[in-house]
Amino acid sequence: MERENLPLDRRLRQEILFARERVYRFGEPTPLEKIALPDGPEIWVKREDLSSVKSYKWRGACNRMAVLAPDEAARGVVTASAGNHAQGVALAARVLGIRARVYMPRSTPRVKQAAVRQHGGEFVEIRIAGDSYDEAVESARLDERESGATYIHAYDDLLVMAGQGTLADEIVLSGHGPFDAAFLQIGGGGMAAGVATWLKTYWPDIELIGVEGVGQASMKAALAAEKPVALDQVDLFCDGTAVRRAGDSPFEILRDTLDRVETVTNAEVSGAIRTLWESLRCVSEPSGALGLAAALRQREALAGKKVLVVVSGCNVDFLQLGLIARTQGASSQASRTLRIGIPERPGAMLRLLDTGFAGIDIVDFQYGKTDGEEAWPIFTLAADDAEVLAAVTPFLDTAGFPWEDLTGAVDVAFRAIPLRGDLLSHPAFLRLDFYERPGALHDFLASHVTGDATVCYFNYHQSGERIGRALIGLDFPSPEARDTLLAAIPRQGDGYRLCEPVDDATRRRLGTR
Image 1 (cartoon, rainbow, N blue to C red):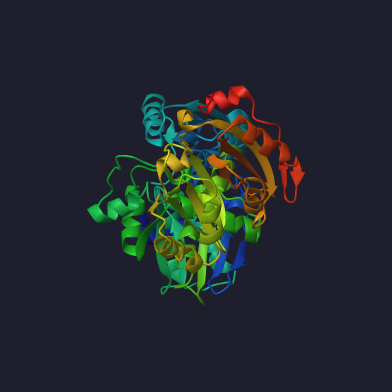
Image 2 (image 1 turned 120 degrees about the vertical axis):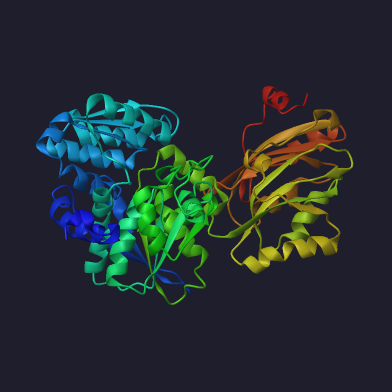
């Protein structure tokens, strides 16, 4: 029977075998490394971030371009990519001596644009088109029609899927299998289709779970609709999997291969990135950590099992690392954000800290005075033990503190801290550096914010450094009380250091006179 007449899944298996003969002209196999989680599964990580283009995408692009006929190669190739696929095309273009035009959306991280130029050299030309991957595809397809160049699809192509499947071939040949489950991230579905097909061929009992971001779940939508459909909006945090519509061929493979599709939040992805860093010193791009994020969420259910995940790439913009580090999910602790009501009087804030947060880490503290009778500070609390964190709200109820859960609130995420200057009498603002250890900030407030001083402003976020930094506003009933207390605070004490005083211009911007 001719290969073209075989069912798609059988053709894909055959093409993965043929891809073995082609892809290693362009790159080397990548390692499989183990993460051991206490009381959790044994997780094996396929390190595609260590490939020559820092992602798995070279496999599919090189496999597809290696079979171009001489006349096709002479006309050149064109593609659209958010970054990783473009690097694979650029690598193949340089090795094969084929001209390539790559259309990339304006939002493509600069590190990926630079890598495309590095891998392709004189054989690649980058053209920026549109704000999304879909708009870049439209421009590339127009180029294809006008120039006669061959379009190299990022995922919806049998030979591209087969090239990606070679990473699963390396897993099978590693000797570390079989695996009980594999969590495979999905953008358009090309990698998941190739890998799932090959793993299921050798380990029929393996559980295969597709993983997508909650704001980009195109394959989940396709499975629900029984055909690929376009999403109205796509979240770009995991830019490497930000695809509006799943590929037709990957859908045909995955609807019969996957056991289920799960979605994960950006915060869970950030937590997985931290786990990869702490365990393997691997810096994954967000889309590269999707599979691990889903596995970590089920670590108790997966305890004792052998689990496979793929770090699909590490082409992350340096500036995005700061966002990832600031994300709540980057903490290995459980966290929760609460807005808590206390009386607007001296000592009330300290009483709350003294009685309500034993064993709790305050990772974010936001407050600005907006009422003369009540204060509503906002705390993001974290704890190693989720039960300790869960006990906070019952305590608040018993102690008579009203509260509101603001976990994930937009104004908290953007640090919109209101402050009514007309409610302040004689304020002072302090810039404080303190050691990030339990009790350091509390000890400063207990020792030095005494008498008639009230906290009118607080802005602190845990950055992960050994030194914490806070901007604290205190209000006093008279200038004399203010000057007396400020004069009594040593510039440096046990666990803290006062920075230069806040100048008048900063006070005016804060809304005070």
